[in-house]
Figure: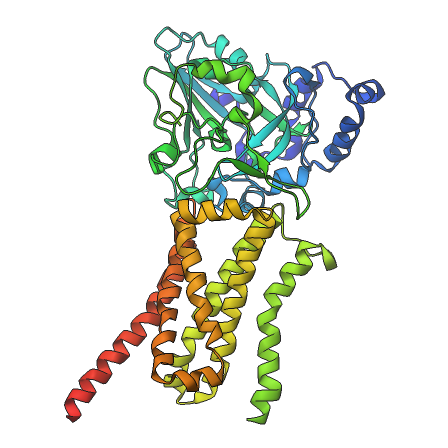
Length: 321
Length: 204
């Protein structure tokens, strides 16, 4: 399989078309009808999408799993985020990730499942129709955004690999490549970045494998080519540039929990009642507002309590933060 | 003397105001300047850093005098110290007015509950008597006690760096640089004091 791949050193942007071609086979809610249905916010969004830089994706908006708030600008989303592999400043990822190679890309899927293997990203993505979901995003640093992601439910991907009864958690890892990721040359965190979900969290319909932003291929700095989004959890759960997904029996030790166990837990559910030891989580500053905007109250499970609170019934969320 | 008072001082004064001017213009997008996606956080951070920098510049004047054998530097010390106070006040103002939307209750809770804010606030409060007694008149009136009182700046600078260090999420490289600079400024004084005691003993 490996021999069939093109020489990575000779890849030019136009070589990635097979993936785009695959996308174009998907149904598209395009043109006037789609825009009219999406209404004014859709119009504003499409204006934003034009400023987005990646190749266009084919997707269906999923209103059921979208909030109605106006998304943040493409500029805010793509120039202000944490991605320590590319530096610890919010502007570092957009400055340092431009040359990051996302094709070809392989993904290892294994552990406690019936169909493990190493796969080309194209083969991983092929069966999944893409949808757009406008999710809230709440950073553990007490700021928030609204983001129109494009992707597919992680549950659909997991089902293909038939996890066994021993699979209690899923562990994800980011690419380890200090040559391309300058942050990995330092020791700010233990590399590669490792995240995890309990199996029921991973199978939850809100849990989203993300390949796009604003209808276009995900910018490198936002986690291309494949990242996780769990909108009811703090943003650091959203592991980026995923190369490995393992089904495991024991709870994985996640990067931030290892780095500061008293400050960052495995669950990392957004919770205004449980403060970070050094700052309050009761309110958040919404990015993109005016200078004099008030902080907004943070909602339990980031506003997704109706959908996900039952996952944690009977658990002490102060202990399992 | 004339040149210092009417040329050098106004120029230095204007330069010290430049960061604040940049923040004001950037906050309102004047001249195409921008403070990024989270301008409040940017301002908060910038004012805090400039306060620390001005504290360090203030502390640098004595070593400069010693090295150059010129008291020229000391003419600017009060101005730098007052600018440190100015940026600390700006830091607090941005925190209260923009970050916390004027909710003093929340501020009070933060001061009590969050150690890094407690020590930051402590440093700010300690700067007040220094600013108040910064005039030549007060200096004369307080005499030796003035020197004693103004040694508080060492404590304030330590608290300031500590405040910075404690609120960083993970990457401590930047506060580490500040801590090293402060360590150098303070050890210079310790070494000098030791040298002077030894010299005093020798002459006795």
